[in-house]
Image (cartoon, rainbow, N blue to C red; front, side, top):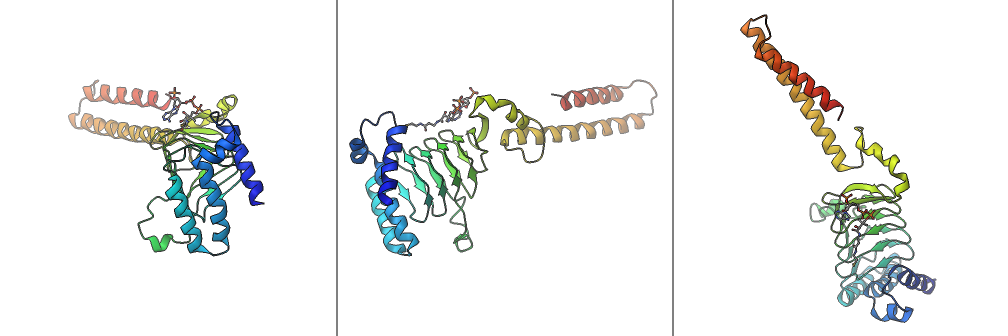
Length: 255
Ligand SMILES: CC(C)(COP(=O)(O)OP(=O)(O)OC[C@H]1O[C@@H](n2cnc3c(N)ncnc32)[C@H](O)[C@@H]1OP(=O)(O)O)[C@@H](O)C(=O)NCCC(=O)NCCS
């Protein structure tokens, strides 16, 4: 079983790294493959409750590969860790099948050092679903989910769920487009204000629009009060300002 998995892993490296020229080269020269090999063994030990031995083995792997995979993490089939250096995969992380991670990726907790007793034995690391790609230097933090076939851009910091099939980039990560560009119309809905917007940028714009509308109402109210105090029946400056505020708000409601 374990050998079947390792052979599959080997084939995945061949299929997904254009630089890989032979299986022998992968076996000899790919730290991502070496780390996986150690993980497959240390995870077996971990689930049999040989925790210390499992941890020691994963530390040895870290020493040799600079890739730290906690033996308690659950990793599916055909994971490729390309280059690998600096990858950290936490204890409660879960990785589906056919996932690709590049160097410097963290699948970590948000603040493991805060009240660590309360966090013990709880899911605090991400789940990366089948076929997802996490770019170099990206940090995926907390018990969130990167959906199937989603792409996380290099150096992104992801702290919220990433829907399946989309690309998320930046800090904090925002959705830029569906991976399958044919489905672009489906994702246009992210631009409309509604609860549960998955795109943090859309959510921020939505909040700002709400605040501007509220401020304009307040300005109008104050202007009307000033007008009343002046006691003039004609078109005062206050009335004109109130009209322009109303116009501005109407334009703001239909961007
Ligand atoms: C995110 C990524 C997967 C591209 O996904 P994609 O769906 O093909 O998206 P595109 O390349 O069309 O880019 C979409 C938008 O995101 C931007 N973008 C892409 N990657 C980005 C990143 N890492 N950070 C910030 N913005 C990024 C693009 O500039 C583009 O913006 P625009 O629409 O304003 O022009 C890719 O850019 C990436 O980061 N891959 C990781 C690769 C890696 O780690 N390589 C290391 C090999 S050693």
